[in-house]
Length: 201
Image (cartoon, rainbow, N blue to C red; front, side, top):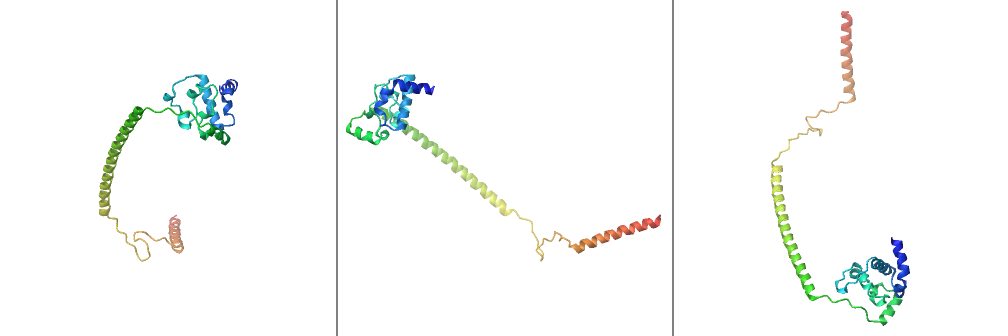
């Protein structure tokens, strides 16, 4: 699809873009070619006062509504920031350019009213949100105070430490000699039992 549209551009619109070749940045040329593709897919000429196209409002590049009004695109309809330096000197000689349509003051007033009403609604919402947050903070503070009182009243079990830095209720570990002595006692007891059993038989 894109290759076909580029082919159509090359055949049908080279003469329309010829004045811009080498004088406009690549970005601007690509966007203008995309607008040509849109124009070829569905031509629509509407008054410029009603046009709110993205490239025209954001980049100040001609959209399909501007392109349909010209056979060959003149340099003076492209914003100066998209022109190469050599093209800028040419344009400065031709100081006239297409002026943007003036906006109706009633539209400005209506837009301002909408914006003011929106801001008032936002301020009321912010106030209600702030009140809600303050109430939550106060409830958290009360809970924290209650928890602090509970912690203060909570008593930990008393721990007694003897002189050897060991808790009194914990046995010390036996040393190797004590372990050997216990094993000897167990062996001697088992030996005695075996002897007694042997004597009985």
